[in-house]
Image 1 (spheres, rainbow, N blue to C red):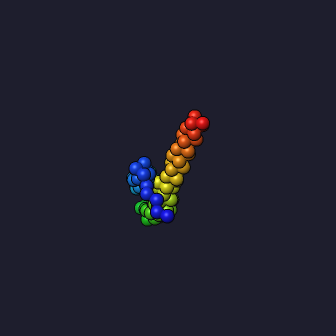
Image 2: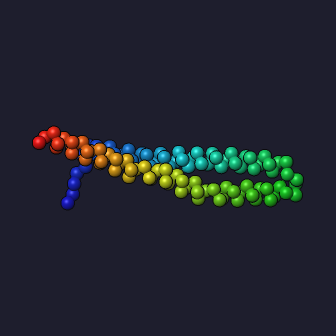
Length: 107
């Protein structure tokens, strides 16, 4: 059974796609900016370190960035994907309630 989408559903699909792409990249960019600030703070601490400790400090900075990357991707995916079904559910609930109220006045 093939069902055609109405105009509002098509707008919703387009808005969902735009949201998913935009929210993912925006959230990932903000998380990356946080990591850059953390790396700068670690670098500043490394500058005052003794030369013998410089390599360990650089390794710690690299390890911190590698630990944060998977978390950033997961955080970005959650921010991008979770609101979409919630928004669709809210919209369908609103349509259902409006139609239900209209039927009550029609009797």
